[in-house]
Image: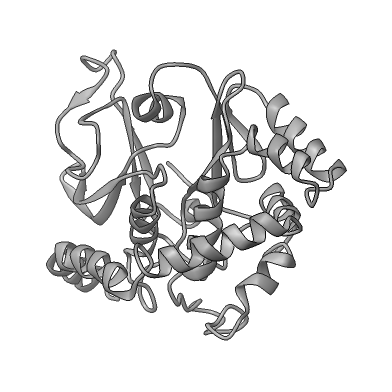
Length: 296
């Protein structure tokens, strides 16, 4: 099984899974264009996402994949994904989003061989060590980035362009299960720059919580105020880093330029709707059959 809250409930509840292609089963990798949009065709593992928060009665099933696709359009590294109907012991479990697993193998496949530190939600170490992450946290907390020399030092540790696109896509598409939750970050060891990746963004794009309706995460919420509060709970490094950067006048101007650029490009309504329609049309007939079978 894969995921957090989605593991709850009986096995009749639709679950997310990981598929491992271990050498005990054969070659140890699957060499097939399972994800046509991916830059690579051979995988050692895949995630089968059930989109637990983005299902009936208020869900669209496609929010997370759409947001990752848009972030990729902005020039960022993102987990590609496609769609399948999953059969377990000959029984259909419904429509699944097949995606890359963002681990060390993923980073090496896209960025080239090497070792990587990878952190995820909860500041959990997925690969490598947390030494570089903790060092970055200490640096952010103890440094005044209105000083250009300090900003330049930070730019040696964090990919500023990547981080900026990561902030913009999450704020613009109103991901309200973030920044406290649902994130990945990685860097090449020993001295690569940290990059940030979108994941599990099901509470974006106008998501309506089935128990809460629009409140407190409706479209009227100011995403900057929400982020400044630390999200639904806690204050992580992402929030601290962004508000530290904004103190630098040069970065503040750069950030506004990047917002304007992306609003006229990857974040333009036409481009977002292109992804929405593409994924919607791909799963429409199968998701209708699944909803009928599950009584939604």
